[in-house]
Length: 324
Length: 160
Image (cartoon, rainbow over all chains, first blue to last red; front, side, top):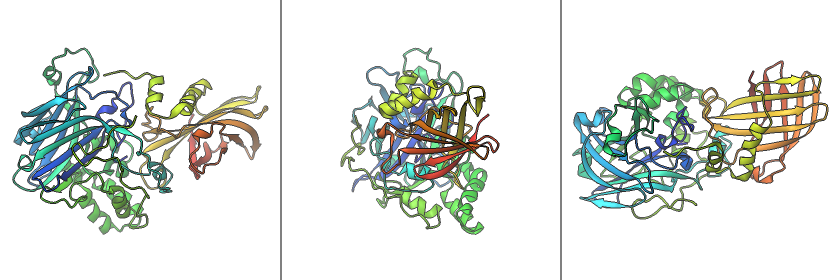
C-alpha cells in the first residue's frame, strides 16, 4: 500500500488496475553516472497486460518548482503475446503536456531487457519489491512482522538513464503519473496501430512521488482529488489533510505544518550524485515505511518488523523474478 | 485488455480455494443488505461495513461482514472479507488471505441484540495465531455490529 489500490474506481471491469501506481523508485546505479528510475503498477497483477491506451510517465523536475521539466513517456501496444513498449523523452513545455510527446529514446518488448545509447529498459511482471505488514496496519498498527507483499507481483517499468538525461542540476524531483484518454477510456474499438492509440486527449488518473502519502493522509474522496492533482499545487490544496492526520498523532500545529511542508509536494527528491537512499531518492531496500511510521506517529511506532525482500537482483532490472 | 470475470478475478487475487469459496458464498447466501428478517421463520440477514484502519488514519480498505442466520435453528453462515477502497468507494478487489467463511454454531438474543457464534472450518483461512471461533454481535437498534479483525475489536455500521 505504498500506493497500491489507492484509487477508487479501479476495480474491474470498469476500472483498470494496470494504471494503478504501486511505487516509484529513483536511485543511483553503483559508481556509474547513471540512475535507475522505476514506475511500478498493477498491484497483485490483477490485470494481465499494460493498458495500450494509457500513458505511463516518469516526470522529472530539474529546478525545484514542482513542475516537470523532463518526462519519460512510456506507452504500450495492444497485448498479444508480448507488448511493444516505447519510451520517449520530452523536455520543457512538452514534458508538462498530457500527451505522448518527446523523442523516442528506446523501445522493446515486455519482459525483455533492452539497451540503447546508454539507456536500458525493462517492462513486465516482477516480484513486488515493496515490503510492509499491511494487515498490521489495517488492524490499527498491530504489527506482527508479516510481509503481505512477500509473495505478490506487480508490473515493473525500470529505466536506466545516463544522469545527463536528468538535466545538469543533480538535485531533481521525480514522480510517476498514469493518464488515460478523457473519453472512451475503456473502448476497445481502436485499430492496432500503436501510435494511433495515443492520439486522444489524456487525463491524469494516478500519480505518486513518495510512498504512502495518498494512502495515509488523504481521506475519502480526497484520495481521488489527490490523484488528479499536480505537485506544484500540493501545498495549497492538501496541506490541511496532512496536518489533520499528523495532529491526531499528537504533533503540535507547528510540528504538523513543518512536516507537511516536507511531505508536500508529493515528489521524490533525488540527488543523482548521491546513493544515500530515502529521503534522497528511494532504493528498493529502503525501509520507507519504518521511516514514515516514526514521522507520522511522532516516534510512538518505529517499525512494522518487516525487512526488504531477498529476491532482488544485483543487476538491471533489480526487481526479483515474478512469483509463480 | 483482457476482461476479468468474477471467477477469474477471485483466482487472480490469489486468495486460494478457501477465499474463492468465500466469494461464492458471499453471493450464494443471498444477502439482502442491511439487516432484514423474516419473523415467521426466525431468519435474518445482515451486512455491516467498517473502514480499515479505524481511528485517526483515513480508511484504506473496507471490512465487510455479512450473514444469513436462522435464530430458531441457531445456524447459518457469516462471511468476512476485506476489500480495497474505503467505505463509500469500496472496490470489488478482495485482499488476498483475508476472506473467511464462518459456520454459525449458536445464536442468542440478548438486550435487543443478536449474538452469533461460529467457527471457521477451513483452517487455511486463519491467520497465524487466529482463533477459529468467531463472535459477531448485531444490534439493529444501534445500527451496528461488532466482531474482531486480526484479534482487534471492530465496530461496523449496519447498512440498510
